[in-house]
Length: 193
Ligand code: PAF
Image 1 (cartoon, rainbow, N blue to C red):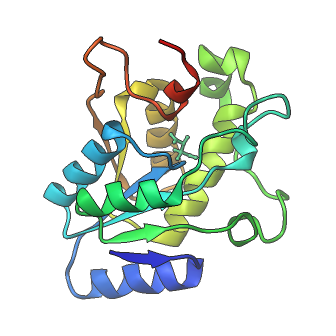
Image 2 (image 1 turned 90 degrees about the horizontal axis):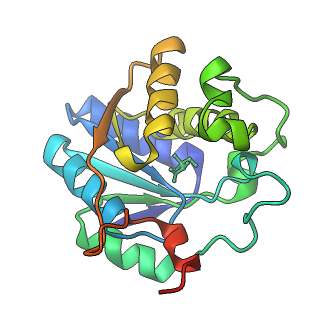
C-alpha cells in the first residue's frame, strides 16, 4: 500500500489509473479506523479496481467548543488496518495541503444542513461538504463509499455530487455494530463500559 501526502501526486495517480481503464474507489475518513471503515474499504475493493482511503481530521466541520484537538489519531493503527482491508493508497494530507489558503471558499448545502443533527451543529454539514468536495477534487474517484451510520451526511454528500455535477457515484453501506448493538464509531473511544 502506497502512502501519498500531496494533492498533485494523488490526482496524478488517479488520472493514470483511469487512463488505464481502472475504476477508482474512494473512502474518505477522519482516521482512527475500525471495522465500519474497513467494511467500506472492502466493499470498495470489490466494486472498484483501486481503492484510495483518506485520513484527515477536517477542522472546518468542528465548532470551536468541539473535540478537534482531542479527536483520536493513530497513523500506525490506521496504516495496518487499511493495508489488511486491501486499500491501495492511503492519502494523508496535512492541514496546509488541504487548506493552503485558509478557509476562504466554502460550500453551503442549504436546508439539509440545518435539520436533525444540523440543528445542534449548524457549522457541521457545510464543513463536511467543503472537505468532501476538496477530497473528491484530489482523488478524482468514480465511486465513493460512506457509512449509513451517518445517514444525514450520506444525503448531504449525494446532493453535493448531484448538484455540483461531480459525477461521483455515492455508495451507502450498512452500519457495522459491536456485539452489544452499538454502532461502531471512532468516538466510541470516549465511552466508558
Ligand atoms: O464521516 C467522516 O468521517 C467525515 O465526516 C468525512 C466524510 C471523512 C469528512 O471529513
